[in-house]
Length: 172
Length: 100
Image 1: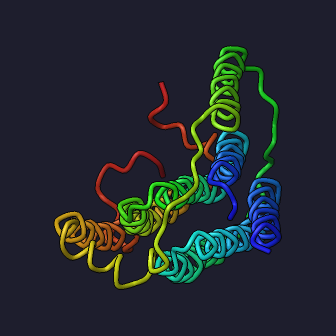
Image 2: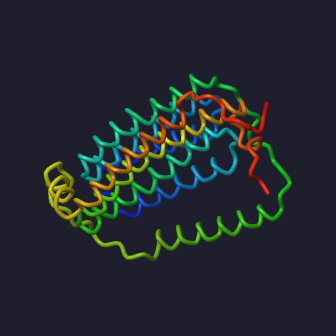
Image 3: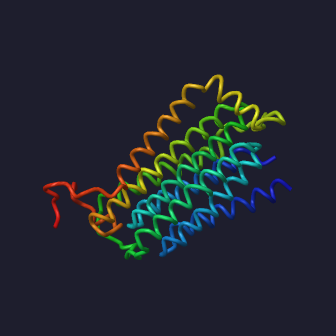
């Protein structure tokens, strides 16, 4: 039964990720991204991380995708002529090397890496256990994350706020 | 119980598709979405390995990555909006002011 669900969610996640890359329309890409995020949240539930699954739905599906769609609507949805093959032989060689390294790592992990049975308690990813760890051992990173969020909020406001054009702007 | 390896392979495939998108697409918004997707793939490996080793530290890391990703999206989309205001395009090939 778990295998069935894993195969289903993995398929949905892969379809979503392929759709993000292949759609010409940015709105469609954002919706495929939503599909991918939800499938990964369901995989988190399969892995016993209920808290993270809910956080994933709220943060990614609730905030990030909505923000993406909002920006696409705001700036207009111009389709750019993508997928243009350009002549860059050096980049092609570098890309080939990267693909080889990555494929080798993948084959190694699939066949030779040690793979014991997972050992998780039933209340493994529940809110209590994650929250307790978050507020005791990882208290400082947790507080730093809030500082980063505050800095990002101020930065985004400064970036996106409509200001008077500064003197000596390069164009027009 | 599905072995951890299958989750790792799935995450690797999603990561690769995201990296392909970053390399192939020219729309800054779609490149950004692909980066988010790659982060999600890495999060999936964190959660899978947290179950494998029976510790919760991986899940804490995923929580922190989510916080950073939210901050990154806010800043990045602010940059994209500013870019459209100044240059009226989201095509990364035409944003080459600092290019050598």
